[in-house]
Amino acid sequence: MPMAGSKRWTSLCSLLLFFLFVAVMANDRNGGTEQLQSSNNSSMAARNEHAVDDPDAVASMVDMSIRNSTERRKLGYFSCGTGNPIDDCWRCDHNWQKNRKRLADCGIGFGRNAIGGRDGRFYVVTDPGDDDPVNPKPGTLRHAVIQDAPLWIVFKRDMVITLKQELIMNSFKTIDGRGVNVHIANGACITIQFVTNVIIHGLHIHDCKPTGNAMVRSSPSHFGWRTMADGDAVSIFGSSHIWVDHNSLSSCADGLVDAVMGSTAITISNNHFAHHNEVMLLGHSDSYVRDKQMQVTIAYNHFGEGLIQRMPRCRHGYFHVVNNDYTHWEMYAIGGSASPTINSQGNRYLAPVNPFAKEVSRSLHLTLMKL
Image 1: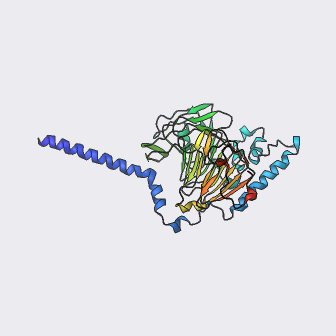
Image 2: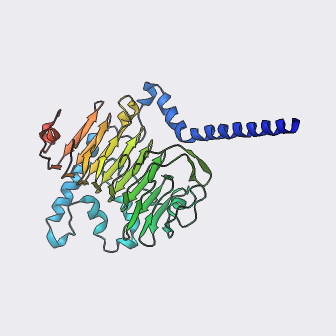
Image 3: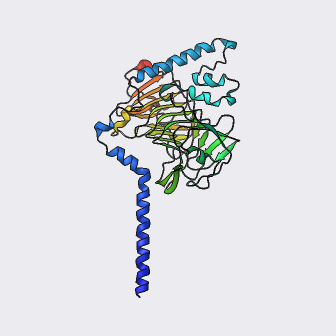
């Protein structure tokens, strides 16, 4: 009997230690959120070092770059001329595949200073697998994005990557899908959390699923317990100098591009969005005043068929929505709360038949709204 009691006591202690371990590791995902949310409003509203003092000046720079590209297009055979300043910057180089890193100099708007992995070496993804999110295999996308050094990540061939858990980006990374057909689909997708200088370019991201309650590596020296993720295509959380460009995004469990919790210095450009409900959330909540420093450029995107709402849905910050094509929506296109500044210029809106879906409920500068 004493031996049996000792075994029961040992089993009970082991069980308690297991639950203690899980509770501690759960803080790895949520600890940063709780720390930010527990800050008082005065510190949360303080100037974000990555936000600019005059966002209108940045919007004017975008307008100027668009006008310049449009004028160059009129030169005919003297110009490769798309009229899109981002595309004109790198597509006009017939040898762009040998000069991929030039892309880092082509950004516009608030995310224009995102350099990604420009100052690092190239990393070639050869393996579409994701067998072990804690110990990723060299040659996989996960192994590339967690490295501490700057990397410009390219792909050896077409591939479909189905991630078991969130792909947690480290700082100073470019994922460059140009020249190949790369899908991140039918599993977890991309998380950009508390990092800086990330470029996501040329991917097909779709059918993202909620994942979590698992251990995931975020750097060569750190892995931790992740609670359930929402299933966003691209989740930007407390990060800065981010550029999401020339991607196709659709059919995910939550948002297609969500930026929250003090994220700023972001450009979302030249993407195609389709077949989704809540497309783009910019701002955590009405009560989270740190997002007053959020500054985002949304430019040259096509909001296509099967979309319902949030193109984008904005809170608190400054949002330059310029030269986008809105061809379909069911509920509303652009919305906001908590007194955001939405500078809407040069967009095309083809509204649905439903009169309630094409109302302008409030606009302080109707001259900027081309409805």
